[in-house]
Length: 213
Image 1 (cartoon, rainbow, N blue to C red):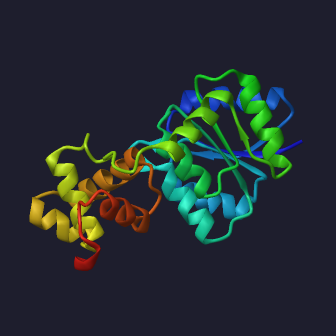
Image 2 (spheres, rainbow, N blue to C red; image 1 turned 90 degrees about the horizontal axis):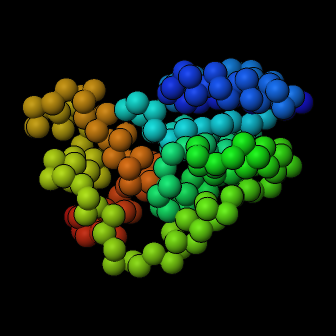
């Protein structure tokens, strides 16, 4: 019997997962839609497995992965998401996730991922394995920032230069909360889990010069 914690911003998704996992003999020890609450719960409850969505209504699952990695939390993570972006797969694995399962996959893929994670092993379904390969064979001159709007690029540049949400909000006439939401969504969209990762991406894509930071 495996203790599992669920992080997803859709209640109906959590209810469906709970029913499925309990039918398989697992125990759901907690659930949340908020990364901050989830981190506190995970540290207190110490579940064996975390099932984590990446897009959390203005927040990013990468935030939780980054904090778990920084705090050396022992709970093993499986990302369960709609995101089929190669860079998201690569970043999740880099940040310690042992599994990456697409929500459109068969239930058997999730079952295999949980079984592997309990044993400390990594599991990627066939489709996700292909995405991982794409992330490592992706041409370095491709620009992941190309799809961003001018406002999004402006906010990224200000973030990587160390500006706070309050400072950015004052300059752009936005509330700090709106700036924080922009930042979380952009980090999830670009497949980075923390500000240092965003800085590396901005330098690689020549959005900023590392000599000016």
